[in-house]
Image 1 (cartoon, rainbow, N blue to C red):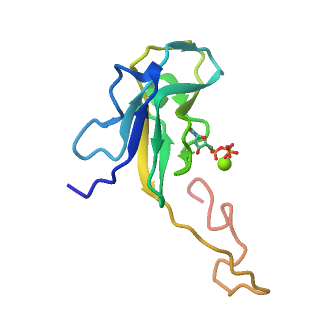
Image 2: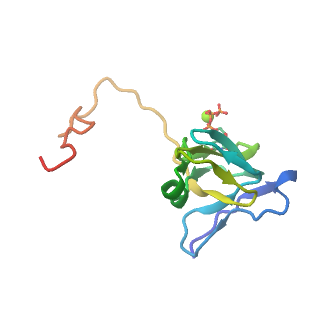
Image 3: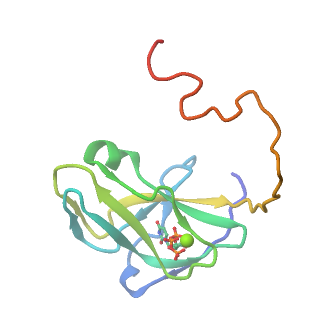
Length: 152
Ligand SMILES: O=c1ccn([C@H]2C[C@H](O)[C@@H](COP(=O)(O)OP(=O)(O)OP(=O)(O)O)O2)c(=O)[nH]1
Ligand SMILES: [Mg+2]
């Protein structure tokens, strides 16, 4: 098993009794996170769903909040800001923003697995401002310049 990054986590009062985010299988990249509240996500509705915990991520890391593919495929439930970013200096409750893209109500029970959390290293950069950038074969071509959808 790869080295595990220790992340401090604090349960909030409304999070007591819930499982902490956990890897569902030995090779899972993300930890499934459960809802700390019950609600009905109506069609088109967004909600910042409570998780019932706060974290102190070590400097140099972030947590990404990503959708679960099963909820997206079967129910149109996704994370509109995906991947959500939890900064290492954030001490508030971690929330999972969900949106219902389907035409059906989506009930969420307390304890339902709603998203997954990925702990990821952050690369910090600094800008080096210049007058000219080096030439490349692509140049300024983008946004489909190398070919579009379909056979032609
Ligand atoms: O899915 C998310 C996204 C963000 N956050 C929390 C942690 C993060 O550190 C903070 C700010 O997030 P972000 O930088 O994405 O939002 P912003 O709109 O730029 O807010 P801020 O001005 O507070 O940075 O909100 C979550 O709990 N879940
Ligand atoms: Mg921000």
